[in-house]
Image (cartoon, rainbow, N blue to C red; front, side, top):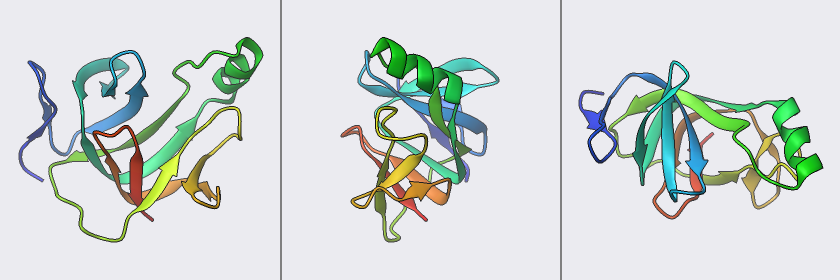
Length: 126
């Protein structure tokens, strides 16, 4: 787990507990640590992941019809290449209160690894 992740001027130490969400404006993944965005990256790999959704933010998104940052994946940043079987996962506040697998839309709460890819999609080793 040695190494760095991220691009640009800010790099993130592997092994750091972070929250990652899709930044729709930048088209990148935002990496947050201790409440502050510390980097943006086109691809991020996390291990020991938990999916988090704040229900109040979800309800605001539904009420206003506009997305806001209320859901993210929490995990340890890592520089590993994941070659295990990957399942696409996603989150849509208008479909339900949890991250879900694709296809099938079964709830996903945790994953061993999550690959947040440069095509804007997330893939998990469940």
